[in-house]
Length: 363
Image (cartoon, rainbow, N blue to C red):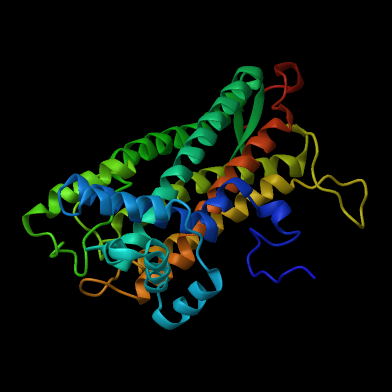
């Protein structure tokens, strides 16, 4: 029997509409574990770089963790008990390392350092995928503009027919916000994917004056931006979620416009579409409707991310957990929307009418 799921993104058949396997894999338990292990290996080596650990100790930790496979059931038990997976995770890693090196695993770090850095490592990969899809989608719009831009459309203001415009005007209104958001995402990527490393309360107290140099060395090893701890400062995470909602919101506008064009039918011709069990003659604009749904979904997720900004003092459990529940679906929805939008644009056989079909301007 298929396991129950509450998410449409990995549901046995709803995922056929909502799912995105490439992005979903980044939020799997396996990907999270791999990124946490990467953090712990890099931490030991960076501590050796800075003279905090002996080189042979760091190399022993690195080698042992290179083949480490955790007991997932024990991690689940630890999560239920501790509220975070890291204490149980560290116990298993220390047992795998053994000997005198075991006690130096995770030296000077805290659970949030491991968990947040794992998230950032995976978000950075997700952003690369999203950026590539966004670039490709803008290219698709450019192709549509070149092919159909000179055709005519009836403009509608406040849902009423207004005047005739070129298809290029409508396509340009689809393209421009995506271009702006692409620039915003590229700017965010410069320093938005930052290492989280602050120790118990963000002060790197175990390292004294060597703390900033160690943090910089660790950031280099992980390919992340070096920044002072941000345990309770979640503005970067929320900003990224907001940028993703800008992407899906702009795609939702495209979906809404195409749905309205398809309702009348004279100004657009679509291939594909969804069938009806009761009306076989219909081709429902499923992809366009999905873009509207995902736009509205991410708009609600962003409100929850803004709630998760409210971290009390140096660390919050409640706000942090809300972020865990909210951010992964936001990323998944964005990736799914971009994939769906490319498919939808590819299904447009024609948008607009040739000038000789128009019979003059309407007022």
